[in-house]
Image (cartoon, rainbow, N blue to C red; front, top):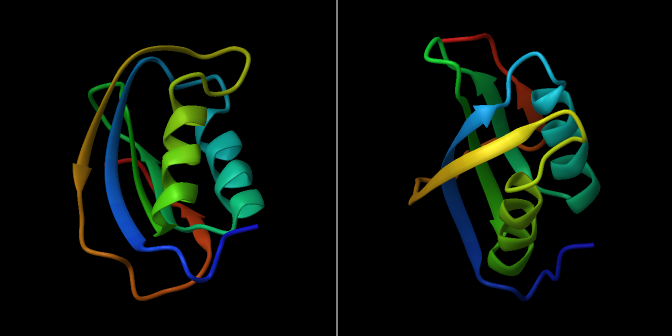
Length: 98
């Protein structure tokens, strides 16, 4: 459960490797919801997955650690992480491919 006193963070992730067609988005959504994070995840036309993850900084870092592994069928080769503006909404959504 997120620590309400923790510093809030928002990170934009670009996950590369075998990350489409392996339930990466659905697994990422479940993990983010389990951790109490907000944001979204979507496939990109270039074969990568992109995610915006917002919440307590330590919990966002736990999600990023999970993202380096992903679901069992995934094979993550690289993750780019950048700072982002937090979302206004609650919850964690799977968005359409862009």
